[in-house]
Image (cartoon, rainbow, N blue to C red; front, side, top):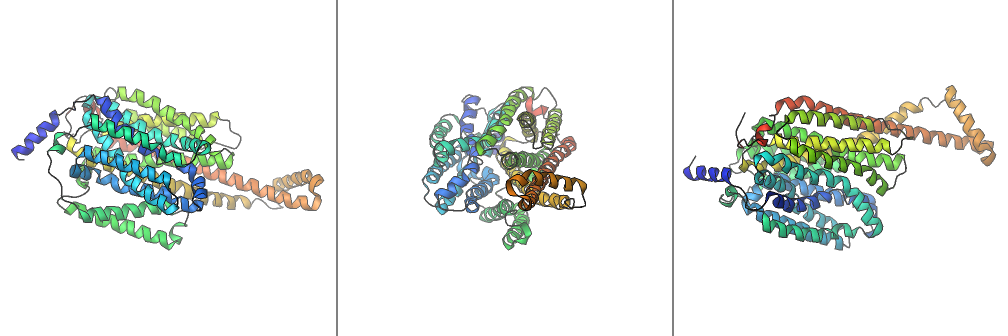
Amino acid sequence: MTSTQAQLDAATLAWRPRANVWLIGGAVMSATFMEVLDTTVVNVALPHVAGTLSATIEESTWTLTSYLVANAIVLPATGWLSGLFGRKRFLILCVILFTLASLACGLATSLGFLIVARIIQGLGGGAMQPISQAVLLESFPPHKRGSAMALFGLGVVVAPIIGPTLGGWITDNYSWRWIFYMNLPVGLLAVWLIQSFVEDPPYIRHGRASKIDFIGLGLLALWIGSLHTMLDKGQQDDWLSSPFICTLAVLAAVGFVVFVIWELSVREPVVKLQILRDRSFATGTALVTVVGAVLYGSTALLPLFLQTMLGYSALDSGLAMSPRGLGALAAMLVVGRVIGVIDTRLLLVSGFGALAYSVAALGGLNLDITSASVVWPNIITGLSLGFIFVPLTTATMSSLKNDQMGNATGLYNLMRNIGGAAGIALMTTMLARGGQMHQMNMVSHLTPYNETYRQQMQAIGAGLAPMLGSDRAAGAASVLMYGRLSQQANLAAFIDDFRLLAAMAILCIPALLLMHNGRHAASGHKPGAMH
């Protein structure tokens, strides 16, 4: 190591920001909350978007897919881009790009224009999460990193939960365009706050500019773009029955393999994959992928259950999900204070256990439930996420050096997003095919030789006969009976999905043995020390 590098490392370890760390946290989280909110706030407005822009609902879903794909491509390259432009400058550029793209989305007069604006918005927003996380981890002293991750968790966990509710309220009372317009004042405020309080640490200020790895960037865009599009459109196009999905699968697989080989061999890669040699980081990144699948999978399933099975409106189903945000808020306020006092792995065991319990409770729903049957599992889910997210992030990053944080947070957030996309794809596929499977099994009981079926048909027919006549009543009874069967089959499919998510959460617990306890990060231990 050269003397210059040694001096830079020493300066990085001794560096502390001039501004109050909570002002810094408020600055970066104002941008991050706005960006994360936009991943879900548009969902409930798709029918309105399609109607305004003369498109089908299916076509309008590209406004979601395009944003997520662009977002995911930038995530793992955040550390490299921060070193290239300077992290503070790059963050301000991202916020400006996101804000201007939001204005363009609101002004869109055609679906094509809106999709292009959403791509630009996704490119601008992709770096905000990992940069905010890296800034918080570096700015807060080691013994307060739990509090820093609690603040970060409020944005990335609570925002996706309140997004559908907020989007539904704005769309119903104003216009879907105001979903994008509301980003303008928030974006301007975020730029001013970042400019005023955020600063780059020495290793970024004095670091040399990296060469542009065009091949790595291209391969990154290829495999992530193909994977996200495949996951988003797979069920809609019947997966491998579609040549389009097959092509995407091949591009994603081949692109990923070539990307890994290239990044491990090039001198200045876009993504430094060597960081995965750290056991805690590799384990935590794998676990957050599963957490993303469970969180986003259950978030997609429950509103669908409430709307299709119980007749809730979009706004009402969003309100039914809101207690999850309250639970997460309460848990993060507590967990941020006990990090370093209690073994992080014990917090994680309780978190994953509570998550499994709450999702399994949703697997016990039926068509005669009360609102409490939905509210309490959601509150417990929110509490569990607080006990997972903060300790998991703290333990995952605990043995990394400060100059590894940008690259590490990019990979960490990418895998959470990929897990979320995979979870939604898996749940929607199992829901559709599970409903068909249960229906096939149930329909075998609808025969004249089944005494229960025969009695039910006679009772329904007798009730309809005074209104329709005996001949028509028999046909109407068959239709009603099939409707009941279809409803019960779909209910069974929902139950299967929730129980699978609960099993996924339980299976995460043994992997916690591979992680550090996280206490050294919260008690002032120097980053970079390996155990």
